[in-house]
Each structure stands twice: as C-alpha cells, then as structure tokens.
Image 1 (cartoon, rainbow, N blue to C red):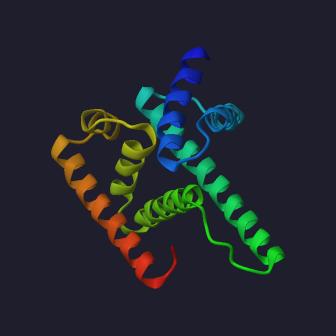
Image 2: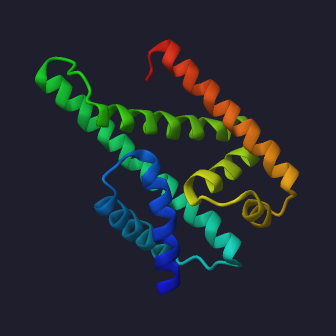
Amino acid sequence: MDRVYRRLRAIASVRVGQTGQDASSTITDLVHDAAVKMLDSAASYDSDEHFFRVASTTVHNLLIDRIRRRQVDRRAKQLLAGANDTTTRHEDTREHAESVAKAIDELATADKFSFEVMKLYMYIGATRQQIGSIMKCSDADVQRALRFAKATVRRSLDEAVLTGDR
C-alpha cells in the first residue's frame, strides 16, 4: 500500500505541477481521491504497466472533474457579479492548463494510441522508453505518437485562441 501511495503521489505531483494549482494541498487531495477510487474499484493489476495506465487515467479523470467544477464556479461568480472580471495571471495559467487538458481529451477521438501515450507522458512523466514498455511498442512508435499528439494539441489550442474559446 505504501508503494502504491508513493507512486500515486509522484503521478499527482507531475500533473499538478503542470496545472499551476496550489501544489501542497492539491497533491494530497488528488492522491487520496485517486487511491480511494482505485481501491473502490477492487481491480487487480496484472503488472506495474497496468497499474500505471489505470493510475494515469484515474488522475486524468479526477483533474478533469476538478477543472470542470472550477469552471462552473467561476461562471457562477461572474453571473452573480453581473460582469466579466478580468482574470489575474494565476487564473490565466489555470485557464491555459484547462485548455491543454481539454485538447488532450479531444485527442482521444483523433487517435486512441496517441492519447494513451500522451497521458503517460503528461500525467505520469514517463520517459519514451517507459512508455514503450507500458504500451508494448517500439521507441519509434512512441516518438511518432508523441509528435502527432503534440501537433494535434497545439493545433487544438491555436484553434481555441482563434475562436475565442480560451
């Protein structure tokens, strides 16, 4: 159990660092939520690779849920205030992180393999070699998937900026 907690904490630390959130409380909360969710599922893990894939998906889903809740809260506050307040630099960083998370989610419809590779890269901080081992593919396949994923996410972010969705 201690090993699982340490691994979840490392995964959460990488991901929370990318979102610009308050790291100390968010990591602990995220690890506890992920651990509870994974333990409640009563799933057995065939290997470390299987555990990493489930953990990255769990952390990803929990962060997306939190981002959506924050968006709803922010919109509600703006409606109650009756005006669109200008965002602070910190809020702008969060908004960018939310846009990146949304773009990564959209990648799932374009290419499931690249989506899985990108999740392992972004949410766990896995190296190309580790991703190859987890996904049971070559380093060249991982490189191609990461190139495609990064280009797709960049294109999605550029489109969001042009259309005003960000």
